[in-house]
Amino acid sequence: MIGTVTAAVAAVGISAGAGWSRWRLGGEDATPELAWFHVHPPHTALWGGTDAVTVDAPVLARLAEGLGAAEPPLVAVAPPPKPDGPTQRSYAGLAALTRPAGRCILGVTVAHAATMPYAAAGCGLLARRLPGRPGGTRVVGTAVAEALPGWMVGTDDAGEPVTVDLPPGSTVQVCGAGASALVSTLPATGRGAGDVVVVTDADAWREAWHPQRCRVVVGEVPEVIIDLVVDLGAGELRCGSAVVPLQRLPLR
Image (tube, rainbow, N blue to C red; front, side, top):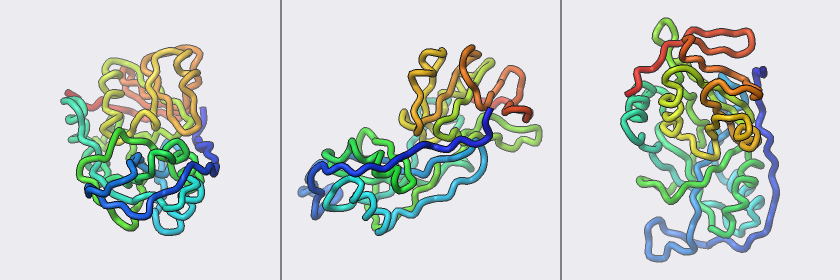
């Protein structure tokens, strides 16, 4: 098992057309069409803090260079995603203190969308494409990109939250009664398909490897190399020789 997992990221510059000289959010002249990305710095360990990245003029200039764009991305902030369904809502209430206040959102022309993850990696950021512009988006000149919050998988004997950061390249196993319900709360932490993939067998685990993504295995699956186990049946979290007692969350 490993204690630290570092994301493998590389920046490339690909010329994919020009940017835009002027854009008004929601205005009639909102052209060309934009692709929206949630950007955040990757965790490099299963626990511990991760420094935020200020998306300012120098970072925007590097992004534009990596994109091969004439103009830098549009910077905006948006509220965190809303929980979907009773299980996610109950999780959001239990983990309210760990939820971020907002998200750093960048808009780039659709022509540059395929290059955005690589350009962002060169700035120490992960870029996850969103299905559209989130509600409540507000354009700003500079924004702070915060790391995703830790995933609360239970509480300790004192009732304090037990969280895991799910760094890219790692594998976390969740097993025991209630495993599927707990895993269903991942979107409530702001994690999307680009951040984490859920698998239930060894073949899917192998196929899902990506240096910028964490794999979450549901159930006891042989032939899988595990970095951390969340064992809801035994009531413990295991990483190497370290064992932390764990109480299940009262999810609905």
